[in-house]
Every structure is written in C-alpha cells, then in structure tokens.
Amino acid sequence: MHEPHEAMLYDQVLLKVEHLKRYFNTPKGTVKAVDDVSFNVIKGETLALVGESGSGKTTTANVILGRYTATDGSVFYKDVEIGSMPLTKRPLWLRREIQVVFQDPATSLNPKKTVKDIIETAIRIHYPKLNKYERMERLLELLDYIGLTEDHLFKLPRELGGGEKQLVALARALATNPTHLILDEPTSSLDVSAQSRILSTLLKIQKDRGLTYILITHDLAVVKNISHRINVMYLGKIVETAPVDDIFGEPLHPYTQMLLSSIPTISEEESKMLPKGVESRGEIPSAIDPPSGCRFRTRCPFVMDVCSKEEPPLKEVVTRHFVACHLHNKNV
Ligand code: SF4
Image (cartoon, rainbow, N blue to C red; front, side, top):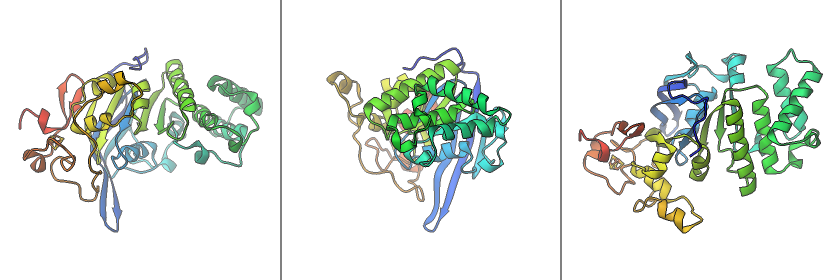
C-alpha cells in the first residue's frame, strides 16, 4: 500500500458527503446516477472511487467539483456546504482549493495555447496581484517541480507526448496551490511508461504538499499503487469501503471480488493472489429502473431470496471495512 504520511490523521475530515443523490430526468425516465451515498475524505489521503461505467463515481466527483448540483443530500468541504453550489457561484478560494485533472489532456488543454499560456492563465486568475516577473518565476518553479523544462514553455499541446501533456495539466492544477485534487482517470489514456511517470509525480506531490486526492478509475492496478482507501460503487451506491490492503487482501462484496478477478496479471504469483470463483458476468443494469433489494442481485452468483426483497445496508464488518451484502449482514 501507499503508506499513510504525516499529514494524514483519521480524525481530520476534509470532505464529507452525506446521503448524496444526483438524479437526471431523461425522456426514458429518471436516471438515479448517485442514490444515497455517504463517505468522508480524510485530509492527506487518496480515496479511490472504483466501479464500472454507470456506477456513479464520475457523477459523485462532478457534484464535488460543482459541475452538477446535488438533487438531495449534502457535500461539506471544510464545513462549507458545496453540494448545492454550482461552479459559477463558488468563491475563488474554493475553486483554488479544489482542482481537477481530467483523463485526456489532449482535450482538456487548449490546443492553440502554449504551455506558458496555459499555466500562466491559472496563476493570473488566482493570484492577480503577482506581476509578470513573479508569475514567470512561479511558472518556472512549477515546471521544474513536475519534471518539465524551459524548453517546454512555448510548445503547443500537440508538440508534447501524452505523459508531458498530462504533466502540464497537473502543473495547471497545482498553479492555484490546491489542497484537494480530483483525479479523473488520470492515466487511462497513457502508455505504460507515461503512466508510471504520472503516478510517481502524484505520489511525490502528495508527500511534499500533503494534498488530498480523490482518484476515479476503473483501473485497479493504479488504485493499488497510489490509494489509501477504496470506495467500490455499483449502480449509484457504495457497496464496499475499506483500506486498500483489506480490499485487495480480503474483498467481501461479490461485486468487488468480480472486479478484482478481472484484473490483468503479469505473473503467476499475482494471479494466485486474486479472488477465485466470481467471474465477470452480465452487464450493469439501467439506473432508470434498478433491481429491487440488492442492485447487484441480477449478476451475483450467491443471490438469495432476501436479496430481491431487502436492500442490504452498508455495515462495518471488520474495523474500517464496510460492506453492503446480506452474506455479511448478521440480522438477516
Ligand atoms: Fe449477492 Fe445478495 Fe450480497 Fe447482493 S446482497 S451481493 S445479491 S449475496
């Protein structure tokens, strides 16, 4: 596991999500993309949100970012309720503190702007009192810190490699001096060597600056390398949450077991460590009309009668290891 560091104390909650719902009305019905989700993010940790597409992880992040407002429930950042606050209404300090790095730097960076323009614009917006020399000094410091050089200053995004583009996106996010980064599939568009460069840079930044990350990904190998805790999401719900070693060492929810058993492995030792017996089957059902009771029941090899009748609550079954499954619910 990525070891906890000094800035990380479990009683220091930076972000609190409480009974969050985000529904979308469509011609076919109401899509319950996030449906009563609660969790905390600890200052200085990396919390991964994992699950297939349609699990609600990206929608959850978009509410935290202010790109959507909550249909119901709350999101508190440092005791300020931000779930009902769209991005355009957020004060500058809040936009400075919560930044995002998107999956594909090729589309998140303006193709007509140079590296200098891209990063300097962020510095200018958030630190308007700096003069152009101070801005340049800050910009060069940032480039050096993330491993780029002055030679990159006047390049356009298309003149950079995939990893370099993502480093520029990272530098732009860091330019505001954030406390919290949302990393939305930050390595999934990159080749293996660029991936490892971005991951080691993210680890260095967190160690040096005590930043808090929410990592959204379907890539469990990435999660294992840089996360402290994992929320596994399925069809708008959290089905399991635990420290990363517990999820990989003893996954309790059949859906988590299914996700882990489908990770590609490179060695026999690695494949021996994966849970057996829960193979990927079926596809995620529609969030317009989710299955009654446990939403995973249509794909679960262990389904029981109770699973269609009662929704399993998210319960702590081992210290800091919560699971929503009747197999682990002693009251059933
Ligand atoms: Fe499977 Fe039932 Fe557990 Fe859902 S509650 S994961 S259907 S055993």
